[in-house]
Length: 461
Image (cartoon, rainbow, N blue to C red):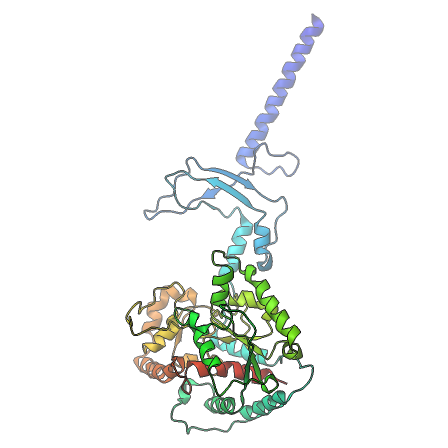
């Protein structure tokens, strides 16, 4: 009996001690005191604080019936912008919201790594127009790849480069207005040499509809690539059938039709890259034009949002005329690539439809110029079209995104005399942003081609 009593008493003491220890751990968990890695949590996840966005009445969303499972990596993640998405995948957040709440549950600042990423995104450097000019000059100093052998076309480009750099002052062209140009004399001389010298070879390779089908991309917000292709292919001045005479080689593909044909229901931009790689492999294996310069005398014209990404890896050495020209995010290389105007060509059957632009990604800058309005550009790091030759600050207003709350005051602060001057210059620059069924001097087609020509000449050595 004595031994049995002592055994039962020992069990009771052990149970009592275990209960006390368990209670202490529960208190520590509840009060969130630090206890390091000595004691593991009894809960399925670390306790976190959850905040909910306020509704229009200022009240917080209900927390009832919300279950959260959060797995946090043991080691603090060092988030940098290149690792953002890889590291963010280590945070697994599963939640079930009550039927009364249809909005997203947002973890609070306790998830400091996520907050750090969001802060970095908000504080991404904004490049001003004056800084863009410096970047352009700097990047032009780094010439394109030296050709494996020198051609007659190379010598002609070098001669043109010297003539443009030493252009004499002139004002005898009444169709041009010096006030909208950075250097009217250099532009005029460059344009004259383009008309006199430039020869473009168009690759015949490529299957329709992705290649050689401009008529399928003649309207909508990506119309620029279709109109340029049509007018380039029909040109009797610039096209040559002798590739040895060519100063530039045109890859006539449509970024819009590439996406629509190969990836119509997907948002995976990588899915179309192998197709373009195979094309480059084909033309570089069949001819030596690409190999001679590493592709630096080749160009493409593409307006779809995917164009910068799908061409970066295997066509990145080309001169890329693209619409997505954010120099911080899109991969646009100022000084090598050129900014393609985004246009929405209208037809006489319904000329008044969507005059203000109804699309998410509307070509509003070109439309503003078309309607003789002073463009107000609120898009950080956006490189405007024909930036290398036009003085955009003479006819447009640039407002940083951070200053949107003060937009009204900024616009009202512009003196009337200055506004009238800018408005007049919009009229003067308008001719450069118009398509014509048959191209005319200084119109959109010729200005795009000149940007490509001017870039090639500037980078030759």
